[in-house]
Picture (cartoon, rainbow, N blue to C red):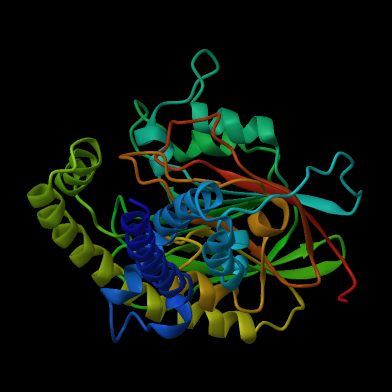
Length: 370
């Protein structure tokens, strides 16, 4: 029995080393895989949390059987500690926010819950939420309004946001009921323009804002959508609920094909945005929006390469921002330049009227770079 136990332990050890390899590959895939060249492999970052969990199971197994071998999965964790911190940060909440902070909120509003009418008796829940949170700067994606008074009109939105004297909105795909991006600000918007890149539905807008004497570059993004249909999402949910081998195999192929195609398009868009960041005339930069990609992805890495992720720096937990179909990922972001400091970044799960949760944080201006 002792001999059989050792053989089994060696087999498990080999399996553990194999899974550590996959964990490291998924962790570093944004650095080693270009989605334009290898779109399918670029999706490896999506499985990072799964293999993190698998290796955590190996760690506990060794602790209760051969404690010295627990060093193996522990070394795997240490080799990707930066990615673990990016994906699952742990930060303490700051009780007293500095006076020089502004509050920034980014929210994919999904057409304000399908253009639900706003009135004093029955307010639109998304508009009410934003009004109550009272951010200084609001960046919205999938911003829409109707010409029919039976639905949410532009006048309704203007009335609710009457304390935001500065606002700019763009229909980035030029369709009548297209995908609008909007920025509402309590501070002057000096300029704004669409960032040109190829997309049939999504887009990005760059603004210059004068905030407390500092001119800030702000970029509001809605990167390429994964274009998953309701059928695709149903397939994914069915796989999770009832993971049969054939069903999983067919479902994975169907989903990965679409995810890979979108990843390749986002790679190009991310490079364009990164160039805009590098070309900014201003030291203070805020980049936010719906990236449609996880923190362990090529798009996130390229855009955030010289910026801080406010959730990583001041948030806590997974920060899952997409709330439907069991796609448990943080795909909404607020990034800042190194001279800004974030406090208490939060993905707020208290409102479920959109398929995204809002993300917001306090940002301190005029921080000295170390």
